[in-house]
Length: 262
Image (cartoon, rainbow, N blue to C red; front, side):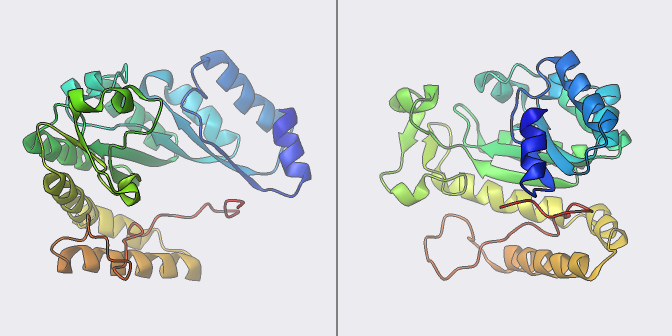
């Protein structure tokens, strides 16, 4: 609480808790939300949490304390691949967490990964189906990246191959390729995923109905341009041309009362 109040005293009006263990201690997380509300602290916040650590009462407490969105790491629509990542969660827990967050009135973000060791192209397609089934407000589809100090990085040859190009070492670049897939397939899965998820009529209608301000309309237009580019480009991901525009995500909603502090 002292850190939060220090940030507010510095003039910040939004705080992002980018911490997968924020709700690891359930009682502490509940007390945090209750204390923020009790003290009447005026700021919005964004949380991240593991699917097996949250339920509707906690998420409602977050909402009542000013939380506007939560990121729930879904990662894959195939249980085998979640086990490979040692996520310690099940697909059923992800479904419950996303449903609970929606009922609590939170904007839901869910990231997914392609290129998990042992993952096949067909399993990647199942992950895309799972993302559409969950129907979060925002979904991102990344390539698994072997950062130094991780199990994957320390055992690269056991799990797959790695790019020699340092520009690939981002969530977008597909630096790592498992033995069961090609780099081209990972890039193709990402493009298929963004196309299918953000082209759904249900998503588009929801975004249209959510427009309230001129800023909302501008964000929607940027998202629409990205969506058109996704369909017009045959191989948008995996290209290294600096001039090629990158999609920013069709209409990611902004917080109601403040923009994230830089």
